[in-house]
Image (cartoon, rainbow over all chains, first blue to last red; front, side, top):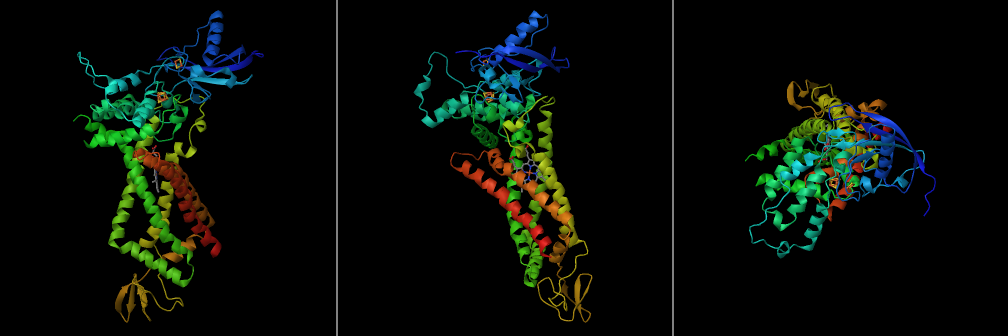
Length: 253
Length: 258
Ligand code: HEM
Ligand code: SF4
Ligand code: FES
């Protein structure tokens, strides 16, 4: 396979020294970018260049680089994880762009996702939501029960699994005009609500996770559906409806 | 329990109310439309029928209860909408330098507050045009077709009667309250093309509000499954287009007719 001539790009990147600094968009020129490289490799290339020139590299989050950890979190040309569908930023490739393109790269924006540096945001608010109810009680005192000993109907098992594929990347929040975490919270609530193991804490789970999300400063849900479109794992809005139902019945109990 | 505080304050509960009042207002729209469609009958009988309908709508106790429910729903929906929109904005203090929301969502779903504001202005003007005019304004009184005798609220004609302060007198004796001629007020009002355009604009705003709102309300209430949701979505689109379109045709028709 031949790599044709590399691309020349204009990059408009959010630079911010630290959480308290006032950031701004900086413009960089990068040439000879292979269309076969990934988006993060393109940023690595830029950072090598910046370091060689004696400038500070652009900070961005990444870990697995294969779409499973949810660390990468860039808002690229107006969309979280860029123009592709069902992919994370690390799975985006430069062939999605053309020679001469200008690419805007910004951090995920939300009150509950404060910028730490450049493109890196603090997503611990998601962890605190998870701690508020995203768990089940299991017996670990020597007489553990095999999870498969409890029968689960196929449809529920499939739906719970689909919900569990959420990697907590925060693209749903980034895409939402209200920076709402509804899709994330709904995925976490549904994952357990659909299974018999999840019933013990079901009531407090939904009440506490929703409450935590609101206290973190995530907005209300307007059902625009932007989250579902941008979610790299295709988490369905069906989960939000389920969360709304669960919240209602939990409130009456 | 401590969670109950979240119950009152929660965004989700605010959205239940938004959806509940919004759907109630959709029912109201259907009722209102059925009444308005009588305006298409342009004969004297049509005029009389519409004015009798106006009497019924302002005196029937069941209608009264429904109208208070409607006022309450509009006000609650309005205040709740303002509170929700404020919370929406607060959640992202710093926006994107470059954002492309059209890639993932419908315009109407992102602009429910603006559409709602237009609808609110429309409602205020509309109430002033007809409701205030009918109740407190100088609405003319309904006469027989040849203009010779006044008509009472119950539809009976008083030959030789005269109208004073809204009451029909015959030889100095009060025969009853005179029927007001709302039909003519509507007909004359819609001779103004600016008002016609304003009404059409109001209906366009409602159409866009409901294109998103109708199905969104079911989602907010958690009413979703694989069988019904596709039907609800189609029904919502049909409702959002057909109902406002029928409302909007009336002023255009009355403008062209005269
Ligand atoms: C008084 C003027 C109105 C205002 C200010 C207003 C405002 C709003 C706002 C801001 C929302 C979206 C809230 C969100 O972000 O989720 C909304 C939703 C909605 N509105 Fe209105 N609206 C008005 C009138 C109406 C009318 C007349 C109807 C029906 C005939 C209606 C039906 C709905 C429905 C069904 C929803 C969807 C509820 C949901 O998403 O759960 N609205 N309205
Ligand atoms: S729901 Fe989707 S977009 Fe949101 S955090 Fe989970 S994987 Fe990311
Ligand atoms: S770096 Fe792990 S999902 Fe992108």
